[in-house]
Structures are given as C-alpha cells and as structure tokens.
Amino acid sequence: MTPEELFALTGPPALLGWAILILAPRRWPLLNVVPQVVIPLGFAVLYTGLILANFAATGGGFGTLAAVRLLFNSDWMLVAGWVHYLAFDMAVGAWLALRMDRAGIGRLVQAPLLVLTFLFGPVGFLLSLLCEGTLRLVPSRQSQV
Amino acid sequence: MQSLTFSSEAPRPLMVLTAVSVALATMTLIWSFADPRLIDGVPVWAKPMKFAISLIVFFGTLALLDARLSPAWRDGRLLRGTTVVMATAMVFEMAYIIFMAARGEASHFNQSTPFTQAMYGLMGLGATLLVVGVAVYGVAAWRDTWADLGPALRMGVAVGFVGSTVLTLITALTLSAMSGHFIGTPGPDAATIPLLGWSAAVGDLRPSHFLALHMMQALPLAGLMFDRLGWSSRAVLVTAAAYAVITMAVYAQALAGMPLIRL
Image (cartoon, rainbow over all chains, first blue to last red; front, side):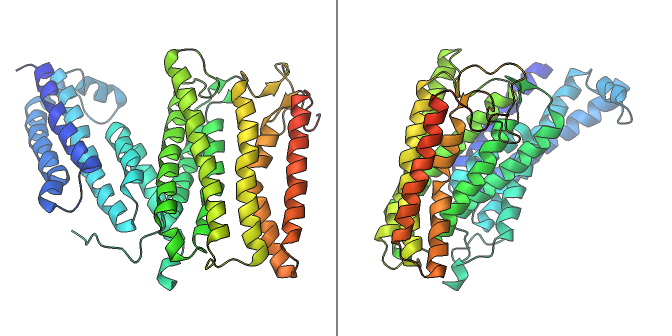
C-alpha cells in the first residue's frame, strides 16, 4: 500500500462519523458512540502504528519548525499527521456536540459549528465554547415562568 | 455520559442565536489582529464584524420580546417556524460573508462570476426573510393579549417592528438595485464617518438603512419610556411618524448624492 492509497481509505470513515454527528438523531447511544469513540479509536490505532514505524526514520522532531518540516518530508508521516487531525477533530466534535446538547443549543445551530470543527477544528471549538459560554451568562427566565 | 434532557432549562432559540452572534463577533475581533488585507480600502474582517455585532442587537431585541410573550404565542407554530427560518437565513448569510471575506472578495454587489451573482441574490433572499421575521414578531406582540407588555411598549414593538421591516425593505431594495451603496464616487482618500465607515463626501445609502433597521429598537424603547411616564400609546405613533420621516429624509439626502455629514 502507498501513502496515497492509505490516505484515500481514511476519508470514508471520517465522513461517516461527521455525518452521524451532524445529521443523525441523538437518541440512540449505539449510533452516537460511533463518532464519539469507535471511529476516533480506529484512527488512533492507525496513527499509533504509523508513528511508531516511521517517526525515527525521518530524523525530525518537535523542537524547531525545521525539525517538524523534516518529520513531514515523509509521506507516511504526512498521512499520520492527517489521521491525527481526523481522530482528534472528531473526538472534539463529539464532545462539543454533547456539551451543546446539554446547553440546549438546537441542531440547526450545532450543524454549522460542527462543520467548522470538521473543516478547521479549533475554529469550531472556539465558536462552540464561546456560544455556550455566552448562554451561561444569560439568566434563564424560563425557570421563573 | 451526562443526561441529555434539559427541557425546562433549555435556552430560548433566539437567545442561542444571540449567543452565536456574540461568538462570531469575538471571532472577527481575533481576525482583525491577524489580517491586514483590504477589500476596496476596507479591512476584510470589517463587514463580518459589523454584521455579527448587528445580529447581536437584532436577535437580542427579539429575545427580549420573546421573553415577554405568552407561552401560547412564543411556543406556537407561527413563531417557532419564523425563528427556524430566521436561524437558517442568519447561518447562511454569515457563512457566505465570512467565506468571501476570508477569500478577500466582496460578498455584496459581487457580479464577477455566475456563482457570486447567484449568491448575492440568495443573500438578498436571506436578508429579506430575516427582516420579514421581525414584522411577524411585531404582529404577534400586537395580537398576543397575554403578553407582558404595557400599552405603549406593545404599540412600540408592533409599530417599530413592522415599520422597521417596511423601511428596511425600501432602503435594501434600493441598495440591491444599484451596483454599490454610494451615490457618487468618493475619491481614494475621501472622508468617512469613524467606525461606521459611511461616506462623509458623497451620498451613501447605509445611514438610512441603519436607521430603518434600528427602528425595531428605537420604538420599543420609546414605548417603554412612555409607559413609565404614563403617556398614552399615541405618543408612540407620533414618534414612529417622526422617525419614519427622518429616515426617509436621510434616504432622500443620500439619493441626492449628499453625505449624512460632510467631513
């Protein structure tokens, strides 16, 4: 298998997990555990294998930007880095979805925030938490009625 | 895993939309520190920021009214449906405005490709839906006899919301019929009004658009004050008429090619 072929294989599970997170109902725990745990765990297994097998050979490291660039000179490491994004973005997305459910943020508003987390992880993380935090500042009138 | 039931403590959808607008405004503030690019001499993040701030006020106003409506009305099919439509329009508008600004391109008045033309048209539709939603809430405030509204405040909300919708549609339709918001061509260093960016050299339709939009805050505030003072709700009608006349005068001034204030 080439790095390119492996990369192509990571797309469908990522799309499946995000589709469940963004579109599927939240009332079936067995379905929701797929993006929460199953797919990120699968990516974690893949990442672990890739990183252990390829890290040392690159001669790179985390100390300088040049060392990081050296890491990603290897296509296998590039795929590993990509899988890292996929794994953590989805795990964070699932956590954000849970938090937003608890905060009472509707699915219509959750959808674009989760799409942002899918595409640009930290941007969606930032906006979701800002949105939830702002709601916490507002005293709930509902409980008085 | 925590329980996902929260029915009694769930925030009102309009409050959620206000919070999303706060989050977006914060994001544009972060953006402003990182991005020096300009579109037509204006920072790329300025329009997303102005829209986000404007939406905070917009949905915040609707949320304040929503909290005073009776459960039968605010949880009724009409207002819930209206809110879903407004939420969809808001998400679409902000997504496209941010997307285009991040690409360093104009979102409004952009006729450069079939895609941007179609999207500019859809933005007009989205904005219209947002504005018409305000009128629906205004009518609901008038009809909802159990709403927690004093007579002048009720009048202020009804007249202010419906009036805002009508005046906004007039100014926005004029804007959409033109190729830009200026009447005349400001020079490269022409003066603008600080923060708002309106031209202080040539006619600019945005001041009247601003006044039209914010009639939905001005009139309810006037009504609230008149209730406190014990004035009749007729005072609201007089205020509304004066406000509409001023808005149309500012609109006519812009069409005549004159700036709001010459600097």
